[in-house]
Length: 296
Image (tube, rainbow, N blue to C red):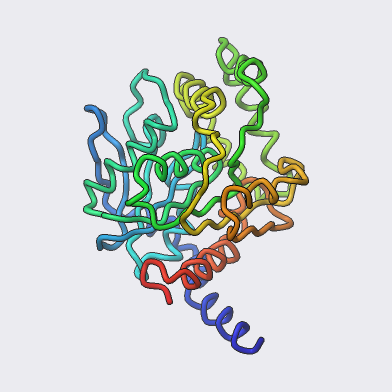
């Protein structure tokens, strides 16, 4: 017990200072913007450090790489970290094309090639979860492990008709109002006002064709929800809420029996921004236990 407490203290002392000193935004902002090419479109990313293995941070629907800044800051200088703006998001190009999970996975692969990274631990938030899982399917040899940040490994909807009904309000001329209702519904009033405003502003600035396309790519493609095994180390960090059915952990363990499954209280869907110290510590413990990215 004393050893575990000492490890936790040392880990927290290494990860937290930059977060509490308000440096997370500066670290990411000051990092050089780079662009990988995917089918003629530019994929924006930032690289902190170097090396053939990296921690790759993948944001969710209508978000940007900046949503993962606290994880980037927590691990920068300790391992190679990549932050990616998925196609259609952030500073990446936003062509009018289908925004499938396959496209997003290929974009990650393009970034890895550009950054000269051979293998990665991929951390995906929300929609980033089916994205990194699809990456694992396409590029298993490049996948060291998966980290899930309040994202689903099974579809929320029973069929495409139900998904279509959910997406329909985003297709019309009043899509911004529909998107605002959706975003407001996942942002608790207890969240710090500055963080709430930042999340809301970024998500609602996403072009309509990207909002709809990415939601369709996530919800209407049954192939990305196949219950195929996950044979690499798997960490799930979830917010305690009604989005997860009572038997969800049991389902996860049918995919990955040894999964590290953790639930956090007092946080929302954006737990990695609300409690970055706890989230980073959990990720570090996972990396250390599995001897990944130089942690041991």
